[in-house]
Length: 87
Image 1 (cartoon, rainbow, N blue to C red):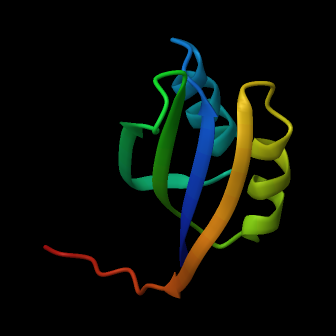
Image 2: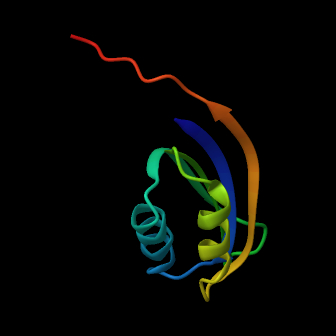
């Protein structure tokens, strides 16, 4: 399974984070880690997501870019992970 780090810059609205996470889930990605903080101005936020999926991250990139409140999306890094089952 591939892990991707995605950086999203968006307008700070109460529903923005919910919309981003909904798109991630609907496109078949699993959130492994998330960090959110305010940008330089108080009107924008930066969301950093680490997501995992066997699917191409290009689909997620294009769907996040279409959201009204999203100003910028960037794919920062992609890595391959192996799944381990612990008993």
